[in-house]
Amino acid sequence: MRKAGILIGFEIKRMLFSKTTAIYTGIYFINFMISAIFFRIMGSEGTVLTIGNAQSFPIQHLQASFLFTGIFVAIYAGQIITQDRSQGTIKLILTRSISRLEYFMSKVVCIFLFTVFITLLMIVLSYVVGMLFFGWGDVMIFFSVKSEGLQGILITMLSGLAFAFSYFAFGMIAATVSMLTSKVSVNAAIMGILLMAGQYFEVLPSVKQFAVFHQMLFFHINIFEKSFVYNTVSFLVLMAYSVVFGMLGYRIFRKKDLYV
Amino acid sequence: MAEKTHFPVLELKGLTKQIKQKTIVNNLSFSLQQGDIYGFLGPNGSGKTTTLRMITRLVFPTSGEIYINGHSVDRDYRKALSVVGSIIENPAFYLDLTAKQNVKLSAELSDTKVGSSRVDEVLEIVGLSDVKNDKVKTFSLGMKQRLGLANALLCRPAIIILDEPTNGVDPAGLREMKELIKRLSQQENITFLISSHMLREMQDLCNRVTILQKGKLVETGLVHELLKDYGADNLEDLFFACIKEDRQ
Image (cartoon, rainbow over all chains, first blue to last red; front, side):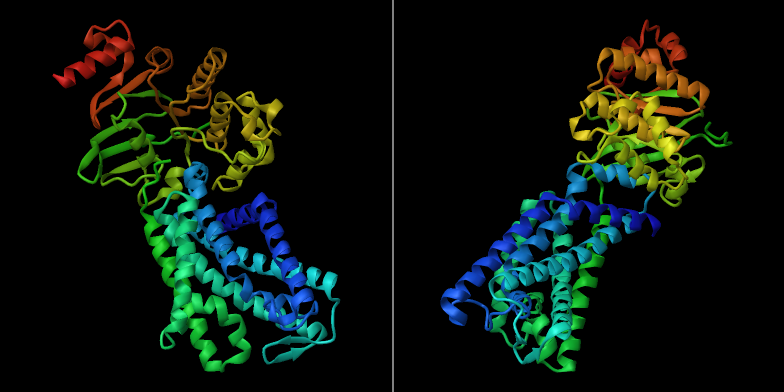
C-alpha cells in the first residue's frame, strides 16, 4: 500500500491548491455572509439560524449546505475517478506495476479526506463569518445541545465528522457512477438529480432511515437527539452504503478495459 | 544495462481480444528477443494499439497469455511490468506539473529504486534538461514524446514499448530519437517494440518487424530476410506485399 500512500499524498496536494477548492471556499463564504446578513435583518424567521453567535454559527449551517456539499462531493468523486481516464494520466500510474486495488483504494481514501476537508472548511469559514457579524457569544445552542467554549467547538467538530461520514457514503455512490461515465458533468448531473429526488424519502417514515439522503440531512443532528440504538443503525446504514458501493465500484474497475 | 534472461523478453501466446462480437486481435503469437528493435506494423484498425494495451495491462485479453521476462502479465503483473517502459497512443502527463515533477512521481510509483539523479539523467538523455522545471502544459507534442521516452527509460527497463513515438516530432528530433533508440538498444541491451506508420523511418531503425492485419499476424521476422523472401526493395514494398497477399 506504499504506492497508494504516494497517490493519496499527490491527490491531496492537488486538491488543496486547486482552483476548484478556491471556488468552493468563495461559494461557502458568500453563502454564510448572506445567511448572517439575513439574520441581522430578519432574525431567526428569515434564516436557518436560531441564534446569532459565532460558536453556534457553523453547526447550524451544516444541514443548510446539503445541496452545495452534495454537488461538491459528487464533482470531486467524479473528477478523481474520470479525470485520470479522460486525460490519459491513468497510464502513467497503472503502467508502473501498481495494482488496481491500490489505485482504487487511494481514490476512496481521497474521497473520505475530501469530505472531512470540505466540512472543516465550512466550519472554519463560518466561525470567521460568525465572528465578523456577531462575535463569539456566550453559549452554543444546537437543538437540545447547550454548551460553550472548547466543549462547544468539540461538539461542532463531532457533528462535522458525522456530517462528513454521511457525505463520504454519498461520495462512494458518485465514485461508482463515475466508473460508468466518462464525463464529470454527467456524473455531477446524475448525482444532483439523485440528491433532489432523494429528499422525497422524508415522506416515507418507515424507510427514510435507510436512505443516504436522510442521513446526509440528519445524521449530524441525530447523534445528539436520538437514541444510541437509532444512531448505531444509522451508522451501519452509512457503512453499508460505503462498503457496497465501494465493492461495486472496484468490481467494475478491476476488469475495466482502459482505452486511454 | 538490462539483465540477460533465458526467456524471450516478450512472448505472446494465442492472444485474442473480442469486444462484443468483433474480434480486434485474433490468436496472436510472437516473441521478442533481447536487444532487438522490432517494428510493429499494420494498417489502421489492425489491432496494434490494442495489443500494446494488453501487454501493459490497460486492456484485458479475452484469451491467451502474455509473458514478459518469463513472468505472466496476468498472474505476476508486478514483476512483469517492472521491466517495461511504455508510451501508449499519446504520452499523458499531469499538465499542471513540471516535467521533472511528472517523472519524479512516476519514479516514486515504481517498484525499482530510482534516485533523484536518475530522474535528472533521463531528462538529460532526451534533451529536456533545460526545460525540466517548466510545466508540461507549455510543451509541444514532440517535447511530450521525449518526456514520455524519459519516463519509459526511468527504471532501466528490459523492454520499451513505443506507440507512434514520432507523432509531432520535428525532423531534427526524429533523427535524435532514432539515434537514441539505436544507442540504447546496443549499449543498454534494451528491446524496443515500436508501432508506427512511418515505414521509411522504421526501415532505418528496426532489425525485425511484425506485421498485423485485421488483428491477425501476417508476417514476422528479420527485415533483411523478409525483404529477400518477398523480393522487395524496401520496407514499404514489403509491407504492401504482405497486406496485399493477405487480402487475396
